[in-house]
Structure formats: C-alpha cells, structure tokens
Image (cartoon, rainbow, N blue to C red; front, side, top):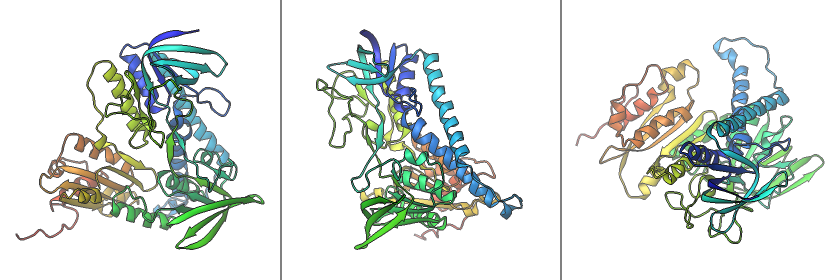
Amino acid sequence: MDRTTDLVVIGAGPAGYAAAIRCAQLGFKTICIDKSVDVQRKPTLGGTCLNWGCIPSKALLDISQKFKDTKEYAEIGIGVSEPTMDVNQMMAFKDSVVKRLTGGIQTLFTGNGVTFLPGVGQLGHGKQVSYRGHDGTSELIDAKHVILAPGSVPMEISAAPLDNEFIVDSTGALEFDKVPKKLGIIGAGIIGLELGSVWRRLGSEVVILEALDDFLPMVDRRIARDALRIFKQQGLDIRLGARVVGTEVSDGSVSVNYQLKGEDQTYACDKIIVAVGRRPYTEGLLSEGSAIKADERGSLFVNDLCSTSAPDIYAVGDVVRGPKLAHKGMEEGVMVAERIAGHKPLVNYDTVPSVIYTHPEIAWVGETESEIQAMGDEFKSGMFSYAANGRAIAANDTDGMVKIIADKATDRVRGIHIIGSQASELIAQGVIAMEFGATAEDLALTMFAHPSLSESVHEAALGVNGNAIHAVNRRKSSK
C-alpha cells in the first residue's frame, strides 16, 4: 500500500517527536516512523533519551543520591537505621518512569493527530520514504517534506569490544541486577561521570580511565578543577592520561589494560562501562538514490536552519552538527516545523545550556575564559561560593560556586558557569539573561529571593564589577 502525506519524520526521539507534534499542531498531515522497541519487543517512543539515556539515568542518579543522603542524616540530627538498597526495586522504579513518559508521547501523538508507524523508515529518491513495519508490512510514502531525526548511539572502541555482560555501553550500565564490587569506566566525560556517580554511591569501587590529560576540557578551568577535587573526595578514582589498549574476560571478571605515564597497567573488575561518547545513527537511513550527504563521522550536512542540500528535506538532533543534547534537538525540531509553516524562528546556538547531573551538578552556557582569550578579547568575571550562600549552608550542601564572565568593554554576559546543587535549574537564569543580551549590571540590579541558591547568581553578577555584598571583592584599581 502506498500513501501520500504532508510530512514524514523519521525518528521519535526528542528532536523527532517534538517536530512531529509541532507539525501536526500547525495543520500538517504528519507521519512519524520509529523502529525502537522495549525489552518486551513492543514499539516505544521517545528514543534513547526517554528509554535508555537522559530519563532512566536521572532516575538512578536521584535514587542513588537519596540513598547516600540517608546514610548521612545523622549529621543533621535525623536518626535512621542503616539503609539498604534493593537494586531490582530501583530498576523497577526506573522502568516505571520510562513507561510513564514514553506512554505520554503516545498520548501526545494521538491528541495532536500524529500517525505513528512502528518500524524502519528509509529516505529514497526525492522525498519518498520507504517504510517496513515490525509486522512485515511495507509501503512507499510520498511526502511534501521530510525531517530526519534518527538520533545517535554509543561509540565503541576496538580495545574494549562489547559483550553486553562484562563489557557494556551506557545502555547496559542502566540494567545491572546488582551493585558491582569493582567497576571500571572508560571515559571521564558526562556519561562516565554520571554512571560512575550512581554506582559509587551504591557501594562500588569505581575507577575511571580517561585518555585526555585535561579533565572536562569543555568546562571552565576553575569549575573543572573544583569538580575533579570533589569527585575524588567522593571516592571516584579518576585517572587522567590513561589510554586503554585492551581488555580480557576470564573466570567471571574482566581486566582492562591501559598505559599511564609510559607504564603498562591493569585494573581487574566485575564490569566495564565504555562511555567514550556517541555517534550519529544513520545505518539504513539513506538509500543509494538519496541526495543527502554526510561527513566522515556520519553527521548529515545542514545549514543553520537545519536544511539539507536536498529541497524540503531537513535533519535535526544528534545526527547534525552541534552538541548531542535532547533540548537542542527539540528546539531544532520545532524550528523546522515552524519554518515549513512559513514562520521565521531561529535556534540560538550560542545559548545552548549543558549539564552534568552529578552531585554537585555542573552546568554552563556561553563561553569560557579560555575561549574568550583565544579570540583576543578582554573580559572580567565575578565568582560566588555556595559556602557563603545561606540556603546552601542551611541545607548542608555547600560544595559549589557560580562564575559569570562579561565582556570588559560592554559588560555584556558572555558565559555563566556553575557547579553546585541545582545547577541544572540555575543555569536557566543565565540562558534567559544571555538571550536578552543582558549585562552583568542587569543581573546585579535584579532582585532575587532570600534565602535561595539563586542569590549566588546575583552575587556573582555583582562581583563582576566589584560590588558583591556577601563576599570580599577584588581591590579596584586606583587608576
């Protein structure tokens, strides 16, 4: 059976489902194709983010942090017996969260009139999409517009081939049925740190091997330095400059061989998580007749409006340039839908926030000092410590700081960097400020509730020009 439609979206992750919903809201007859299935082999919506990434990992992060907090309640006067962890129950809760949210996407599809086709979609000649359903059905769909949103998958390395038992990727790390006594993680990026934090809090000995000599090179240097110190205090054994050369599974355990400072070393553990990043998932996406081009890493070429080189075909989310972040993909999907409808929205790629959901959280938006220096520009900055924030002190959660960087000549905010509790929420203040072209003085003149963690943003903004109230300011030049 063949059919025609206004629009086909291939992929139902955040970028794809957001695009499909907005297209339907704008009056387009919309079909969304996605091949994802759950552990019961039933179709599931939401892509990696809802099923095997953002959402389930945050569930485990929150549960493990609550478990850790419970063990420390005595410090603030709460008496509890020694807490225990039921890993199976924890995983059941995680799965219930996933089910609730993926089911929510189906409700949104139904409510907005999006037709969901579970199976594989492939772009053919022009704007024709071939669909092969999980049930064996197939058809050709002629569309007026096509949006490609296939997402990404974990990267693999030859030195640590996955066996999905002893050596797993980030997906497998969310399915452990017990706490590993010893856990090795390859990669000290966002995924490695988050997963390492989960299992460390639950009792694992965690060793993280990072090939780079610099810790979190994309993060402000002061924030990264503080984070490394805090994570080591929490028991994460982070070994920088460690290049993995091989792995070996034997007798119910696994060993990872690596080179550190010119010496060969081995770490024996129960599990290894390979967390070295993600790559665009384009296998089977494009037929030979497709005119779409990709780079050597598999990313599809698009312009700032997410248009490909082929007319009326767009690509969004992890499969295109830029950070592989769900919120970035969602904004791209909505932008494309609006553009197809004749509106003129843009995605501001200078204000895409990034977050690492460890505890303390790390969040940032805009430029770092190093990036500004590389441009030859002059800047000024203000910092404020959580250790001087009344709300943080009252909560007994004082690890962290806020740093605001502003242009020296114009005072306009160019970057906000946070490490601390609820950094993922506070960073939105920075995003809003930068979207409106705010200066440090604008933030300094804004009233913040007291007591609140947000006051740290206020004080950091005051500190940019040497006017912080609850911190000692740098001495101003007499000139």
